[in-house]
Image (tube, rainbow, N blue to C red):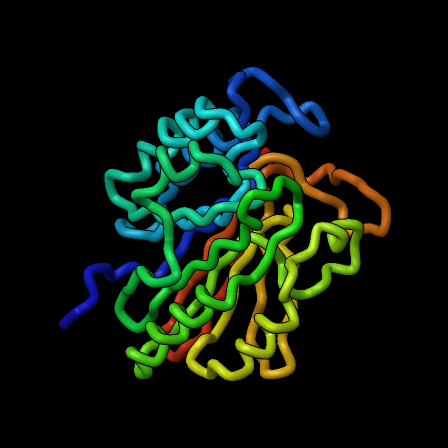
Length: 260
């Protein structure tokens, strides 16, 4: 049976940090509502985006746990839904009931991946249930679900997406760690069909490679960008997103785009 989707490009948006107040600014005086609006406008009018792409949002959609922040997100991305498919993964800032209520229909769950041509994209939820904070955790039951789906399609190439970074960034962001990251990496080493991992959280397009050659790729924020330094910092780089191009040989390319 052919895949329901035929996209070969993933548009990764991450760490939107939207507020209930659309005029509120955050770090560096950046208005996260306006920067995401600008990015969506760019994507809608871009000539090099496929007619059908996957819009993959890797967490921290809200910046204040408000229902309004998710309503703003839905309104902002609506122009993309005419031609593109949307999937979202929660981050630590999405540890609230509004995420499921407003975005649950697009949640990329570990037992419901999205399939296209030669690839299958899986999601993990790294929120810590009932605990507020910036750390995340790997859940073994979710790994079991993903592994089952991977094993059911051995001829496909597989990509895993989550919010938190599983390999140290050598920056202050490592205190906001992913608990169970070593377990995740050990599990990943036993999954040769998984060709890569995408994440958010660190507001930076970090690139790491596992000992087995699996590319782990971070993404910029659609708002402000964290400095990869030992002390807290915010850079002067513009808001950004990432285009992932999937190839039928199991490789993929990541290209960062930034707005002014």
